[in-house]
Length: 282
Length: 249
Image 1: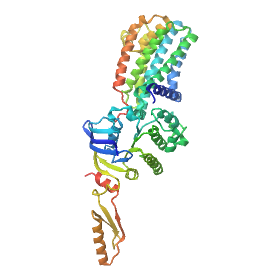
Image 2: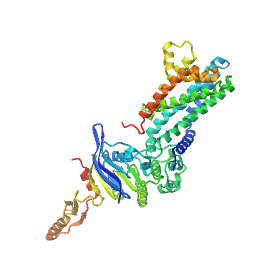
Image 3: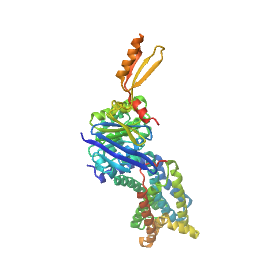
Image 4: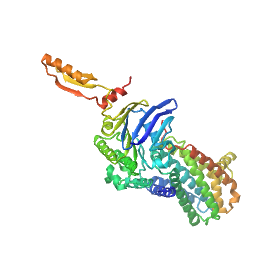
């Protein structure tokens, strides 16, 4: 598979502060890639370099074969951007804004189709000033999608959403993946990364701490948990790299004492465990 | 494939539509100079010499308010709201965007000048402008100059809340000094020098010649030079300092 995004040894410095300190990522065409990390980790800086908003201090970057810093129209016609926060003309309705935006692109999607995709049909003719925060966020999505881009940047797309709105946004993102779009997503929600991303890079202090599919990321980075309730009724949790041996020892001892291990469970380390372990302040 | 000219036209039409949907902008752009004209006309009624000064002075102020004031507001508002940043992420060419925005401002100026000119003929006993070419030349020069200065000035305004204070701190003194010096033969020399060095008074001089006296462009070359110098200064700083994004505090 060809890479939609290649980033090598990316650095970004704001005066004395180094926001990005050597990031390497490669996103394949058709992949949903998540940049996961706490606020201030350098996620947005990285994405905004890829979108062409900022110049990098050092490193190599390729987006669909272009260097984004040159801001070529040919690249901007192929990408869609959902910024973390961006306003829209408050006097326009979603339908009007989408019609106008569609005119920027050589082969736009139909406005009706995009309105349906983001679930904004009922508000299509209401001026933006009267839309709720969640509806405006859907309009953000719609404006980024109307040009039918191959590559979509989503910078914290569901921050501030209620659970229902978040699920709806996830469905939209999944349907984009089903259409074969490449998506670069930043988020500080673990469940979001786990639910959507094919691969995740955990970022902190401008560096990638771990990278891989969410379910595999755990290997080596955190421990399995074996838990049970002891004879006194207290919950005991044992962390281990080798759950087979641990389980064998625990059950052997319990059988020897003639006890049961109540509520015995073995837990894979979740992405949350990995994340918390990696991003914990030393 | 959308070309730049078609996109400029689309942007222009969008700007027109939004302009009419924003009543306060429409009021400040259209009604305010006309209110000044009506109020001034009522006060100066029957004094033809004063009316001859009033009409070109209001025309000059209308040029400044439809370009300098309107664009400074517009740029700061869209920048602070993140609309400019969003547009920058699309394939809309920068030139097409600003072409549409500028054409919108120029339309407002043209409509105002037309209204003021007709009012001068119908209600103020001035007759039709004596030199149409000169009128067009000065209005165009004033539009370019004040539009560029408005965009450049937007760079100095830190947030939308303070836009009115910043804009009026420039607009009102410039209008007062320019009107006063234009009207009064006995204005102190230092005020006269200040007014002559600023672009509004030369613009009003040119409009006065075009509308009232018919003294040709040749008589007002120095006024045109002052406007052009400010325009050049404005264009350089409008382009150089332009920021598409809200400044980080």
